[in-house]
Every structure is written in structure tokens, then in C-alpha cells.
Amino acid sequence: EVPLVESGGGLVQAGGSLRLSCAAPGFRFDDYAIGWFRQAPGKEREAVSYISTSDGSTYYGDSVKGRFTISRDNAKNTIYLQMNSLKSEDTAVYYCAGQTPIDYGTWYVEGEYDYWGQGTQVTVSS
Image (cartoon, rainbow, N blue to C red):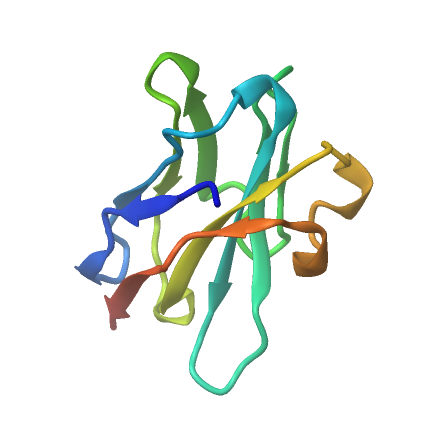
């Protein structure tokens, strides 16, 4: 089992920012891609963003494009999700997940991920 640990969630006002972290100490980063998903109450889990830790390719869901930025620090085995211009509809539990082998074509499919963190709550007040 390869642990993933999210942190950085919290309560923020609409228009504000948060940065989520996903620590992956047991990963060989060249072998994995990391995705961020979120799940709001009563809704299905939604793909938010994705980064290949080998070449840095990134993808974003339509609802967060232009507001969220995913990045990596390979030396720290950590992935970040910078979330700006937050809206009330961004309220959800955010999860990071590990995908191996890397497959950009299925980045938005939660079933293609082998490892999941426990999630971190993000609440945006309007």
C-alpha cells in the first residue's frame, strides 16, 4: 500500500484561495501520475486536475480551468493544487490519487487510479 496524504483544506470566502498538498512519500514519481478529484454532498466524484510526474503534462476539468493550477515538487514527493477565485460550488472533499501506469487518456476516470488519499474538506462560503 502506497500512502497518499492530503492537506491544506479549510474554510475560505468566495473569491479567496487555498493550496492543497498531496504528499506521496512511497512513490517513485517517474512511474506515477497524480490526479485530484472532488466530491460534493449528494454528487458523484469529479475529476479536477492531473499531472504526470515524469514529464509534467497537466490536465484540468472544465469547471476549474483558469482558476486552479497543479504543480509538483519531485524532490519533496509532493503535488500541489493551487485554487484561486474559489466559488461556493467548489465546496467538496478533495482527494488525490495515484495512477500507474501513466495514461493521459483516462486521467478523468477514477477507476483508473490505484491509490487514494483520505481526502481534505474544502468549504467556500458565499
